[in-house]
Length: 249
Image (cartoon, rainbow, N blue to C red):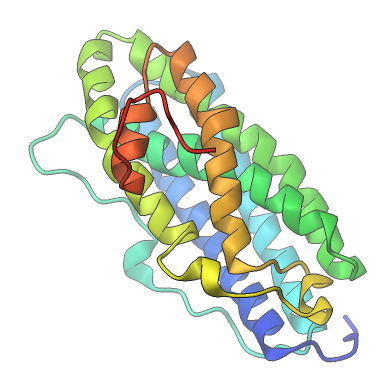
């Protein structure tokens, strides 16, 4: 593929990071599919998981083409220890399936839909826009897979224990998510130059704003439909006090 005019170094770094993230997502989902087979999940869930693996590999390939088009050279740097799922000693496998489902799919893929929609709106470079078009379309299905899987897990004989597990894990899961998308000091960074936003990047502060929006419009109602109230854990994760109903917007 021929390169376009060389993009800023930060653009190259970000697209290489996305290649690495897509490989990691493919490996983690592949491992989760093995666990789904081991716990006797329905073939529909197994096949949906395998399709997600194929999606993530396609995203990685397309992202690498964008990295090269931006002037990047070299291969992704993959930390092998991050390409598998750890087991919790002494815990039933269903517990670890639930943790991964919660963190990676219900939380991670749900906010990803809003993030990629925002990135796509300001992207003008065709090779980058094609990636974001494909990723956004696929992320909706990945998000829905997570909530379907969680609903199934809560409906099994293990449901009462797993429901308690989700309630206990939520604050920590939200805190990890905020550390990833809204770290301290992110709001101090200003707007990005157009030469970066046109390649599908956005200011660091915008990630945190979209995460807060995702809580109100996605997490809260979706957990409520499963009989879970995430507002207390969210307030704990963001360090707020006061009535549980006063969640941030």
